[in-house]
Image 1 (cartoon, rainbow, N blue to C red):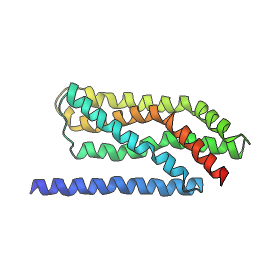
Image 2 (spheres, rainbow, N blue to C red):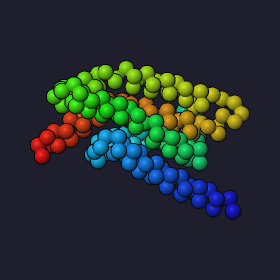
Image 3 (cartoon, one colour):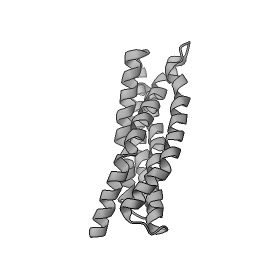
Length: 181
C-alpha cells in the first residue's frame, strides 16, 4: 500500500539524483570542452550533501524532528542544481583568465576566486536567508517544507565555504597535471 509507494518514490528520487548529476556533468563537459573540469565542479556535491545532512540534523536537534521524507529528498535534488553554480563561476573565470587574459594558471585561479568571491557570497546569502523562514517558521503546515529548507540551507552554507578553498586548489592541481603532460 502506502509504504510500497513511498519506497518506489524514494528509489525514483535516488535515480533522479544520479540522473541530475550525470546531466550536469555532460552539460559542463560540452561547455568546457573538457572531461576533467566538470569533475572538479561536481566535487562540490558530496560537500553539499554533507551540509544538507548537517542542516537536517540541526533542525532535528533544535527546531522539530524532521523525517527524511519525499520533500526532504527533493531538497537534495534541488541542491545539485544550485550548488554547482558557484564552482562553475570560479572554473569558468579561471579558464577565461588563462585563455583570454594570458595569465599564469595560479594567478588566473587566484584572480578568478577573488573576482567571484563577492557574487558567490551574495547569491549564497540571499538563498540562505530566503530558505530561513521555511526552516524556523512555526505554525500549521510549516513542517511540510522544513526538511526541504534545512537541506538546501545546510548544503549551501557548507558548500559555499568549501568552494572558495577546495575548488581553486583542485583546479590548480589539475591544470598543473595537464601542463606536465
